[in-house]
Image (cartoon, rainbow, N blue to C red; front, side, top):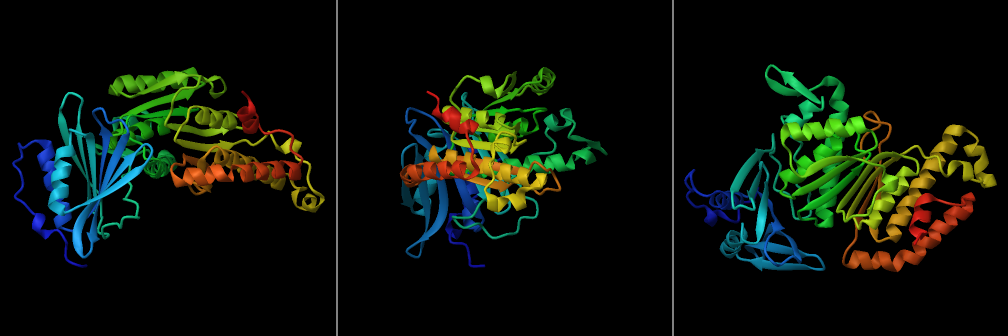
Length: 413
């Protein structure tokens, strides 16, 4: 490994009683000096400059000299500025608390989180990444995902964990569920970074059930200083009461559960719309709510694809393949979710359809992930809109489809 570029930045550590921001800056210096610096994210802007969403700082080499590059994310543009190491550190020092409430330092072995409350109280938290000996990620690499804390009392209240010899451990029957939850949070973290979300982040989780994912999203957003405003929406009143009792018992803020149906939800501003395992056209209604609410991120795991199958008039060449019910069902599922993805793209979202976890963990493992495009990507999607709508029309013609619920909802005034 090449020697660190920032060895001159090492300074004596501040006293243990020093303010949290001084100790945080010292850890940033150490990370730079030791070559362990991954990136620094400042979020939660304060003051009147509401256009600024967040700031990302990375270590680079500029014309053979070490430097810090600052990427300022605004709502309508990105601005990059490069600084000499000492000047960059001085700039970070002036921004902590004054321009941004939260700072998150990623290193090869630790994650360091600094936060300032609205009353001016500073907190500092260091989380060790077990066994992390990998080199510092390059600018285009993803930082290692912090798993959810198993010791969080919420998981015990929901029956995911119990105490074994005084230590929290997974209930064996819930191991697959725990893996699903962590994988979902990993996908969400990448989407949040792509969307450039800064706090407060407003989330609606439709069909929240027992609240596993809802609580996980709240925990992850809170741990990353994104000021969660999370609402779980569930038809079953007993589930709503259970989850709200957990909130009351743990005295959690920024999260609540309401009884409701996605098909009758009033439109309200959202940053993230989640709908996992919404049956048949309930998925379409949830996607439509996300679009109407101008959500920057839409996450859906559809199931029970019933709407299109009875409409499908099969072309002669496909009839021998699709004479078996299982194949026809798989074809209807593929067509349904392909149309949904194309419709989301036509509305300006970069959309992916993929298996988010292995089949051994759940049979309902498909994810539709849509992130609102911005800048050049948004312009490119807008230019492709006529082509996308033509593709939708051709698919419907090929299969003899008369209607698809999301397309109908988008066509309504």
